[in-house]
Length: 579
Image 1 (cartoon, rainbow, N blue to C red):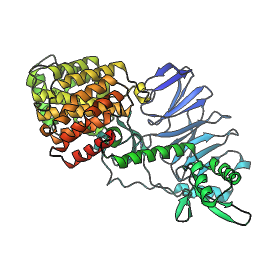
Image 2 (image 1 turned 135 degrees about the horizontal axis):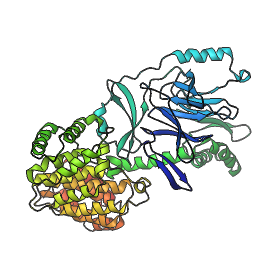
Image 3 (image 1 turned 90 degrees about the vertical axis):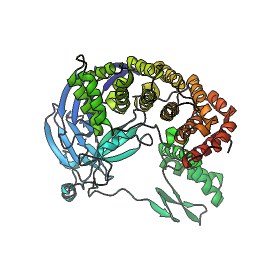
């Protein structure tokens, strides 16, 4: 988020909040301490005590993302690259010296010990630049490079891309990359499951005229990263192919079995193959294949890998909401009309929910309105539900203990209307999905802040008051089951170990499964998915579900199931070993 932090022995020494106005791309060693560059187009030099010594804007309005940065050891000059095809050289005090155009996007720059520097392009080419005439390329090579660099990068056609408004919708998995049409430009975003938001990567460009990436070699109808000749006897040789993400043991074992290799030859082949594989790529492939096997076995479970959180995202009724809120505020002189105007303008600018600010004045206004009662409260709760999709608003409100208490009080209130209960539960659902995650949750160490777990526990118990499968109003029933499903999704996504919370979810949801004929099919779908998911989060919760699993399957099977419910039930049976 633009913060710069200094650590010593893994302990935070100093934090410079919002040191940059956008995501920091690179941190590099500098003779004065260290230097940073970011998506705000700026380069900054810092002391080791995190004091800013120098700031300069490397790229302006059209190109703001500084992908790479490196100081040149001998001269202390700095080299930067952007999200286009431009490399720039700067004096130690931040004055522009030289621009070097490239035929492709430059992803990184790195200084060399002799004072030269190397650039890495999206065309698969590394290029070294020098001021030493003895190391310079030939005149022909220089001319070829300059000619290729003069050709403009092809702009991507944005007509078929999802619009900026689609940034409100969550991604399907952590690390998902997607291109959006943002103000007529093709902008690349990456989905962060931990932060529950799309993180800007840079602008997507067409290819330049650089050298294409190396192609794989075909062998027996298959394509491989590496192909080599192996002499299995003095007279006989055969070709062996493998990819960098192949486990070398598997490659050699298969090859040895196919050609009856001796142990000595098998060892020699392994010694040749293993260094030409990538352990990280192998691990990633194995995890991908494991996920694919699970995906083939189930379609809806676990929710955190299949479809993520469910959001109540409708913003189509902002106009009538504004009228109702304005009427209430106009009758009370203690409210700031300007703060209300700013709040509504922020809420109505739906396409900027991922990036627009949310002021303390707006937060104060929301907290003040949340104490209203009766029908006057309903549009406030609905506004809260919408604000739980706004990145800055959910960050400001979800961690506020006063806001949490008010929402639970409104949910627990005797005589609360079905709409009041529904809006509270929908706001909680969105809060679970979109609240910023703590360092504990990000590390997936199985823990979360105690206040978060306690709040979710209290919210589940409060929701249980109204969630009766035979008497709950349909909108309340659906909103409540989605909320509980999101809690399970959160537990699974971050590997949270919270037995009491998991068991509470089961105790609330199991009656819905056992009384399936009385439950709306959409709500029943979330019940099944949540019950199946919670068995993967906690052993005691799994035992609790398993003790009534067969009865639940029988009850659900006798209801008028939709296709989605049938598929979810099939997953449920597989997870419990009842298939």
